[in-house]
Length: 388
Image 1 (tube, rainbow, N blue to C red):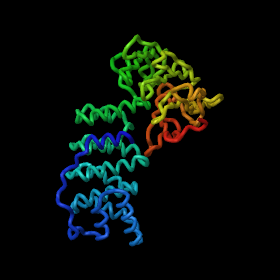
Image 2 (cartoon, rainbow, N blue to C red):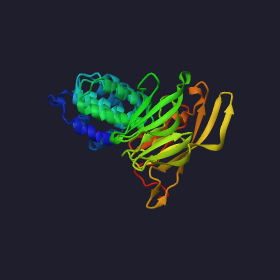
Image 3 (cartoon, helix red, strand yellow):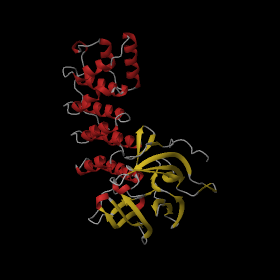
Image 4 (cartoon, one colour):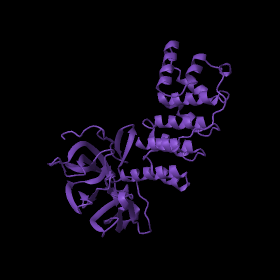
């Protein structure tokens, strides 16, 4: 969400607009013309609702016809796409692909805006559409696609950065990629040994050096090292890595490092050079826009073994980066329970939560998602934590 504000300011220019639409050239209902000739937004959506109420019919299908009619003025077609997105009418999502190939940039911008509206309902195809928009010749379209994509897909962000985007968008994409990696995105090894690195604030770095590797399962174990900007490196212990997802990250301000070693969650205080044990657990992830993180802890007796694999029940716990608040020690609190299925044919029966990813399913709503695991809705990051 915050990235969108930055992107909007980075690409504040608007494409040149041709002559405005003429009512007599619009072959559809004149009331719809009045709606589609206005700027997109809540007022336009309300006006469209009034037209529907007056006619006693839902008009989303009519919008689709208008959006697909190349004889109609591009502004009206673009606004029809905007309204289709607002209505989240999934059967007309098929219009967005062709619209992204339109010559008029307003249609392409509208297609990106509509794709963003479809993200909560159809995340995979909507993300693919945003990936197509990242390849657009217009920086404005690229910017709007970045705004919608945010930190959802590290692969698309890396591909975009390889395309040499405009400097301002390059910087924003790198910030989004950093956020994605903090939330559990797969890292790219920096050499043939499988070494992984994660840059943090203030010039700090985390470095993972694998010592045992199982390429067939995309698994490894090795040592995690904290390399401060100034000073000697700190050995943080041995960690397990699946699918190149590093179970360690910096707090947003770089004050703390949260990491998993020997299946115990630790928090390292960068300034003090000390570490504390939070307790048993795996797969720590930052809770966006908070001073907290979440991790998984297997429940006692929570395993069910069958011929097809192992079903594991976990508690999801929330804990603060800092051990105390106002002199009071804050203990981890259970916020959810999740089930996951481990199978030897899938990453050597590693827990699916090892490659879990924290993503924004809709504005302000964050979820933990992983293959072969239930989805967990995380607490509202803008609400005060319960019990504090």
